[in-house]
Length: 341
Image 1 (cartoon, rainbow, N blue to C red):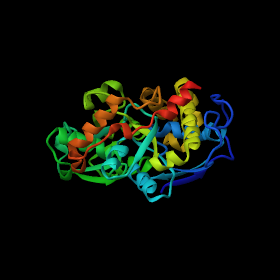
Image 2 (spheres, rainbow, N blue to C red):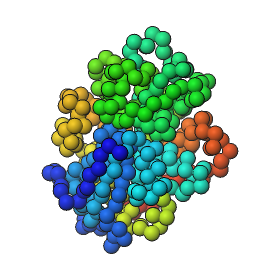
Image 3 (cartoon, one colour):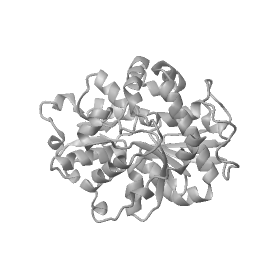
Image 4 (cartoon, helix red, strand yellow):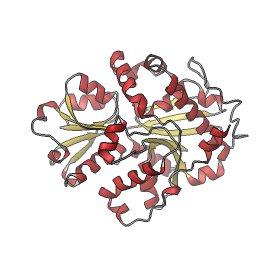
């Protein structure tokens, strides 16, 4: 675990998106103190979480949210299954994989509509590595084994006839540790997100092989949309705490609205300075490039669900023969209720 913070008593300055009184759409909260897991909070992939924190949207809904930041999405998922966190901001794919394992885990709001993940190779290897198939036998840095960055590379490898087992995956985290791993030569390639990738690109350390930061790039890789970060939790938690879940969804939707209207400068000012990786101009550029990746509706679209499943089936043997009910991976009721006011 990299970082632990407690929210609810301090509010960063800035305007709120008005959603009425605390948990206005929800009623009395069943649980006001929430423990939330995330894997790599400084990444722009999880910007809606940071904005909900820093702009006071959780507190506006009557919530006190304790954030546990783990080294990658797989670790935050483990924390949810183990019961040490209540909810997780993580990759949508985890809801599919856990259904195959008999775990009823469901997303309740979409935060990102494009993965935003980039696969890049060390610049000195660019003449040798022209596509993912050339990574066979090499060391690839991912945020954590079993995370969405790992899935991304697995899919690209299998598409080109390379088994994921033919590559050595190394967990490098989602911030300065990831940048350092590439600069020190500890890895040959990296699958990560902005601002990590933006920093490595700017410094001339890497050459991009696959890029899902844009709609065009995502469609080129997956053949359509592919949902990214969501807020997910156990079905039992949803059933027992519907008002609390509604309040969480309302807070994240407020954050998405704020991001949509904010300039890169306003976003950079809202996040902790350490998220800039020592280069504010770089962070501004990364934010500008990443803004289209965030969800515009909060709803995981049906084609996105299918594309995510198709991706996982390519390399996940447990899913090959599993019967997956995609309608059980996302519960749209809370977003729909919020939209109705």
